[in-house]
Amino acid sequence: MPAVQMNEDQKIELFTEFWLKAEPAVSAYVFASVSRFHDAEDVVQRIAQELARRFDEYDPSRPFVAWALWIAKSRVIDFYRVQGRERVVFSDELLGKLADTIVQQADGRSGRREALEACLDELPPKSRRLLDLRYVEEQSAEEAAREFDSSAASVRVLLSRVRTVLASCIERRLAMENVRC
Image 1: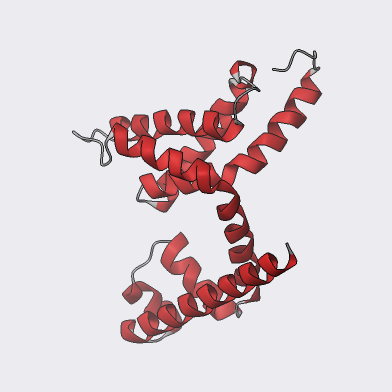
Image 2 (image 1 turned 90 degrees about the horizontal axis):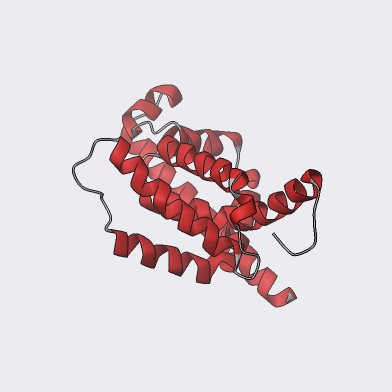
């Protein structure tokens, strides 16, 4: 912590501020490293808890996101060990390079994430539900098709169209943001 003494409320407030800025980069790293959505969410939550618990160890002369990603790398490795896998899907070296790259791109990712969230809010309910079924609930096209009383091929086409609409919306929002800057 800084040389200035802080009470617990001030520490919590500072940690919260740092975590909110670092979370998109940490999440990007974890979601790129852990294949199952729900597993990745759990790992991100464990990282946040550990960072909060160990916040007194943080050296404020260094970027918080780098420290958070250092912890995240360890938690991803631990995740694969607990899963009982003989080998980690990614080498320690690759995980380190991924963390370094994410630190460098953290600001851009934050803007892209904000654009994605805004674009998701603009989608019609049916399109949003389809994305939730496929990417949050991890249903196959066949399973999603049953809910929509449609064919798997139709669901795949609709998913492709929704992804195209989202990509266009994100790029348009990012371009508008760059014009404002």
